[in-house]
Image (cartoon, rainbow, N blue to C red; front, side):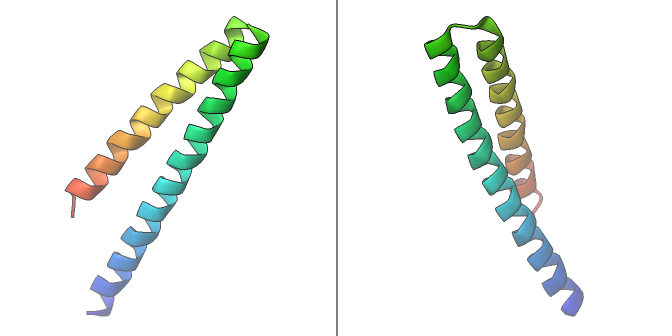
Amino acid sequence: MWVRRAKDQSRNSLERLVRYAGKLMEDAIEGARAEALCVGFPIALSAAQRMSRNLGQCATYRKLLSAST
């Protein structure tokens, strides 16, 4: 019983961490896009696109995590 409770608590903590990381990445992407638009550097836009792909991977991980329950 205590093993299951610890496992559930660990899963809940991991899910919260993934959601928080996703929110931070969304904020970073928006900041990088705004910088790219204001400054006009292709490098900043490229960074925003990379972060966007990473966020997609994070969303995929969240789906896998929820499917494993």
